Image (tube, rainbow, N blue to C red; front, top):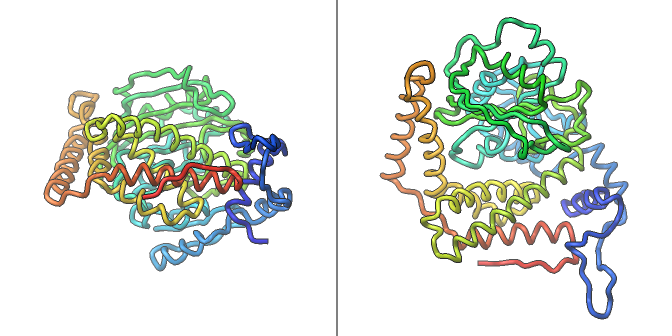
Length: 427
């Protein structure tokens, strides 16, 4: 049996809703017939079983092998782990098979490995360190403004760190600017109870033991830093999630395994790539796109998009989400539009501004500053600004982007609900 994206999404919904075939938002009724009209596949349980055995053997796997060539040594671990193992310079990267077709180049991966290893708060083998968010799209996106990391920390690692007098970090040039902590609730970020603490004096020598003390009280810790990644200086965020020692990805957790590249020798468990986690990630992407589209269209209707920085920033973030959704659902005809948006002048200026925003803590001097980092940041921003001025990229085509965003949502809904009448815009 060949699995299609539509089969998978409909099966996810079928099981998510406890085998109920109703979703009030998508019931199609007519005056003559008040019963819902659905087209559901008949083999939900068989599809669920096939997913568990084979995970996601899509075309992305073949594309990944072709793209890697001689640059990276790759071993397939599909049935066992649901991901491909990339080995670059002796370093292992466990890439979800759905992302394998657009993994960053070996050179970028190697650079990101160094950054992740420096910014992790627990040793390899004690915690699971991941490249997350936009960084996994760096095979498609030329420049990102910041770097997101995610570190899964078992309770035993926290207990071990608390007993040690010596912190992990002895050298390095990453500095901390802010720490946010709080308890998760049903696997969600602790937004309503997130406690923020300014910690510009927190350097590497103190970070690990400080994080361990916070994780002894909370299960969520977000540490914002400034450092180097991929030949630039910018914000690096490491989110630490403390979990039970037998954590198996089956319950709720505040991240998405399908947007994470695990670094290190230990692979993620196959449960991380379940149909449940795949479906949850895709529907999160969909909701993020829909919410952002409202803000973008409001600015467009007011005819002030070109001067509305918040709307432009939202357009860049939404384009990343849309690119991911289009890639994961094989909507190849929409990819070019989102790639163009992420190469536009507004996108590159957004990345530059992110680095500029990092400069203030660096140039204050004293124990809170870092002259070398500040110099590197200024040099990078100056060079990029000069490049954009001399060879300006095209401005963002907002009309095309809005149309493509509507289309990616409409196509996704059609995969989930084949009988659903959806709004779709074309150029």
